Length: 117
Length: 114
Image 1 (cartoon, rainbow over the protein chains, first blue to last red):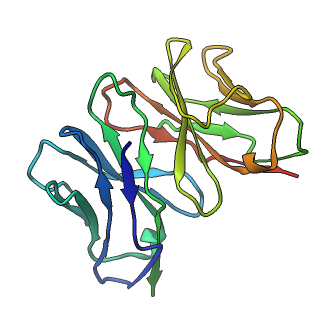
Image 2 (image 1 turned 30 degrees about the horizontal axis):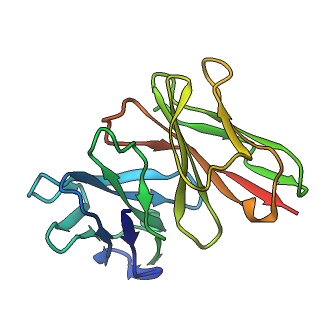
Image 3 (image 1 turned 180 degrees about the vertical axis):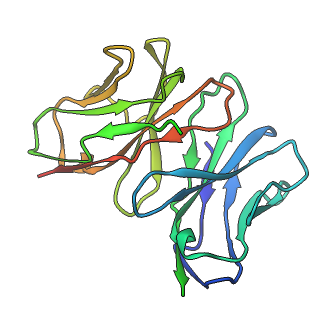
């Protein structure tokens, strides 16, 4: 079974600084998708960024970027120029790309990010 | 932007009672999911639903759980006889297709079993 591990339960960053959230995963599959979801205090989980495993290029969405290391099974999220609105719980998630494996997501335990003004 | 909605936001029930959690997925989505998150633990998959039947379920989704799409808009999760350990946040999600990258999540229903 796939497992996703987030080893940092809590992180903090000064406003305008950069922070990196860690995520590792375990799978025997070669094709899959990885995601970072943000869950602000309002509770709705919002997709931040996604990465297809077959792509070598790291995904980037504005201030958010990932460092995808397939061999190391590592998928970290970098938030640049942190803003107060970035404060939230961040979940790393894995989804198989196999058509017969279902579409379920496997989530990590989350990292609670605090942004200090 | 379309959103997944869930009602109620918080449900308190007594052990042994039946509860129904309701979700309205995004209207053109075809795949529907339930996840749960026990306080302090990871979000766990319960079940996926497509074409009016369960397509996949986890070990958590035992006989006390059932899902239904009673009409064209709602997607419900029923727990027949709640236990204390069912206390959790329950998230509904939907996706456009089986190969869609993204699942859109609702805000969750916090279920408290006393």
